[in-house]
Image 1 (cartoon, rainbow, N blue to C red):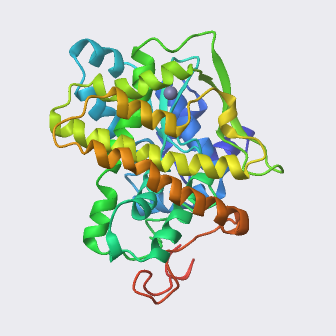
Image 2 (tube, rainbow, N blue to C red):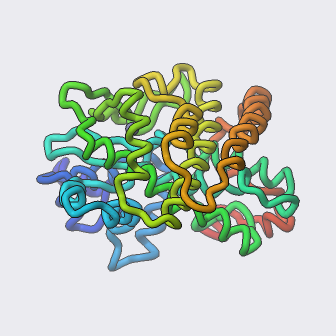
Length: 366
Ligand SMILES: [Zn+2]
């Protein structure tokens, strides 16, 4: 067997045949995005295992490309004026895996590619269980364990096999509530990257090498540095505001999106705090990104409040974040293993109300 054949074989468990051909003879930005997605999965055993399972379950109709949901990008475009709609429809976009919670615009030979991390969906779900106000319906230890899972998702120490092993059992109303803001949060992050694109923030001369996965420890290397467009602090703040204002949302949609964006910055601030505390060099140092708190305040100040928006409540939200942040940083300093150890973390001990019976890896699921 020649070398190409062997190399193609690595992709066979997670791609269909026509996708493998596209990966080995890239001719446009969509092929390139597919190649990056596939390589990231093939190079990381924990992602590979999840995707091999998904492919087996959908045998005969599996497509890696179609397994990524593009609806948040499409929703943003749908609400744009016709001129901007035409501009954004022509750019390549899609989710991929990365431990960068912000989106990116990669510069490639085939044109720009707008991406955001697919892991965010899981990060948000567990963050919301911690941050949303469920009063005493969600016990303190469940909220705490959920926060650890959320942080572990972004640090890529947590296995992403949630569809096989959901890590616990949630009452239906709570499951609904924690999922509700996610489409808007993904839309906001996608919109931020589209805003950079349409506002002319992408300077051909200002690019940085941005890895898909930042090294989590000093004995690991950054994975796959890609050429990404860089933006100034001012442009970052502008892209946040325009992600809400460029599309012509109705008052109700705008309120939902505004609140989801503010909640996202609360989530981001907690992740930033952990990264700054535990990483040997800050992954945020590669560019002059404003902090999540600065972005939060800028957004709250710059976007006119839609009807029924509770400005007072959102002005107070950072206090809740401060409180959780100080507890989280204390936990990171005394329980670092709970964040750095690869594997699966759970909402509670086995055979409890919030966990259910223990599933045995490779026995109850594979
Ligand atoms: Zn940006």
